[in-house]
Structure formats: structure tokens, C-alpha cells
Length: 237
Image (cartoon, rainbow, N blue to C red; front, top):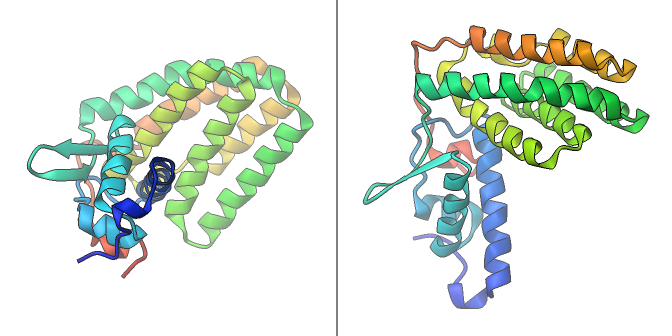
């Protein structure tokens, strides 16, 4: 039995809002590697964890399936997606094509406020690493890249990058050499310096080499660690 909310008590807007909250919560857990590739996302368990109905859970899972974070298999249910080695390479190769030009544009557009935000973000990433919260550090590392895409003010490209960065979390979870697979502090510091100086060519070159390095650090022949229980991963145990 779940503690889900009876469906008639919620109107369409409320269901959509709750589904968005559930999708965001699950996505954060995936990005922080609390939910690992291949873990089953049972509707009853997810519903109990978030105190929502199965209808809300299904809508949330459909959203994550569209974002390629979740795979829905007929008659089997929903699972955290498991990109194979080919997809892992393609994700980072696509990032290496898109993000350098985005960094170039961001360097030309970054305001002092943008630089201050990136500095604060980088400090939070370091604090997470120092505290041993490697999952949170990984999520913040991805957010740093998303912030650069936002500063570039290229909405369509930023949407592609957001999807790729999100899927990168799955790739790293499966094929990680853990701490080395997090965006190294010196790489982000160098990028931040180039952005602050408005050095577009340097920002572009640094981003390209950074993403190539990340791909080379992934241990592609090996797979993920065994998943924990869903309740434990969501902090509900």
C-alpha cells in the first residue's frame, strides 16, 4: 500500500505540478548517483516516497523517459536508463561539438554578475567535494556547464546541451573512475578565468580540451556498481 493522494482530490494543474516535482526529485537523485543506471523505479515505491498517486508517478516517469533518463519497458516497468558504450561516446562527442562554441559566445557576453554567479557555483562544488558529497559535486559540475550555456544566450543550443549534460550523469555512473570523472577544479577555474577576461578563443579551446579529457577518463569497458534500494536512494528509508 502507498500513502498516495486520491486522484479525485487533484485537478489537472495540481497533478501536473506534482508530476513536475516528482520528476525533478528523481532527476536530482539520478544526477547525484543516488539512483543508479538499471535501478527499477516501481510506481508504488515512487508514489510512497513522494506521497503521490500512481497517475502522477506515471506522468513524471514519462517526462524523464522523454529526457532519456528513464527507460519504460512494456510489462516490466520503468528503469533508470543504461547508456551503452557507443551512446556514452556519442554523448561526450556531441558535447565537444556544441559546448566549445557556446563557451566562445559566453565569453563575449558574460557580465560581472554572471562571473560572480559562476564563482559562487564553483565554490559550492568545491565545498561538496571537501565534504565527501561526490554526487552533489557531480550535479553542481554539470550545472556549471549549463550556466555557461545560459550566459551564451543561445536557447536552442542550450536545450541540447542540457539534455546531454543530464545524460552524462548516467554515463559517468556506469563508466566512472569516480573522482577523476568529476570536472577537475583546474579545468573549471581556467574556463572561469577565460570567461572573466572575455577571451573567447581561449574559452573555446579550454572547453574542447576539457570535454575530450573527460571522455578519456571514463573507464568504458566496465559497468556500474550494484544499485541500492529505491527508498534508500531517495532518502526515504
